[in-house]
Amino acid sequence: MKFPIFTCFLIFIIWYTIKRLSVDRKQEAEQKRFWEQEELANATRRQDISQLPYLQLPLEDLPFGRCPEDAALTRCEEELAALSKEKILNLSGQTNTALKLKYGAPNLPLLMEYDEHFTQLVCLLQEWGSRLYELNYRKEAEQVLHTAVAFGSDIKGTYTLLGTICLENKNQTGFAQLKQYAKLLRSLQKEPILKALDSMDLYRDVISTEEPLSPARELPSEEEYDLSFLDSRLTELPFDEPQDPSGTL
Image 1 (tube, rainbow, N blue to C red):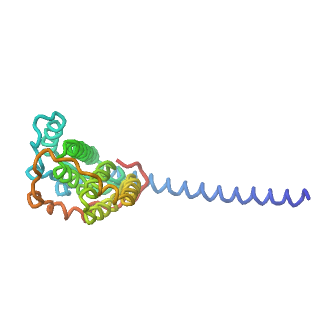
Image 2 (cartoon, rainbow, N blue to C red):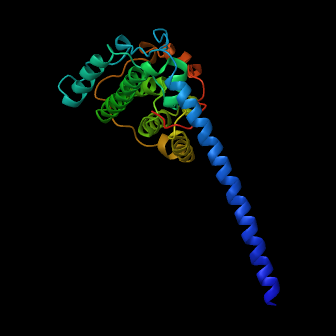
Image 3 (cartoon, rainbow, N blue to C red):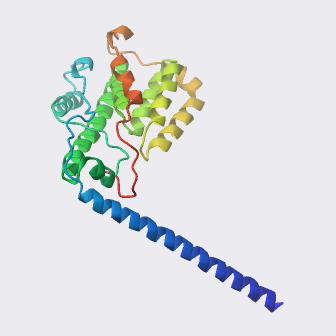
């Protein structure tokens, strides 16, 4: 009886050793490829980045000045106006190595700065849209949040609040389009956002039948806010998928 047990144990040890060696060799090969790419990336000369798809914030089409006495709204509007003068790039999902390979190592600090501006942009749009919603400027909140999503925001609260507005308005088409935007994300937040939207979809009848709050003033017609300038952004994926395992920006 002891012999079969010992034999099974020995077979397990041999199998585990072979498996571990295989995994170690694979990891070593991946690390070697990464450092080879990193060395090549660090040697890549500066490339022209003047024609990259920088984001332009359409200040003239956004609902500025709706409630000048509200300090939170005023601060968001002032910071967004200042940020609109900076260069903004959405580099979500792009690794440092991939960026250096494509645009040159000397450009990496600038690209990181432009990507940081993007983070500031979507955070401000989320804060602005949320505050507008709290003040019952729902059409304006929808417009601001839609802009953030079209730019490629991966802030979960932006999607859930915009989804809530769509369901409150019984706008199933808008809610479905919001899901399509989420599916285009190249971010770790993609799956949590989709999961949250799926959960909201299950309760759409409850949300859509809730008594809406009274607006702070008469809302403009839908024609007054034309969001068609954002539609093309759905298909804008300007950067290639990353090819190496270095940390993302």
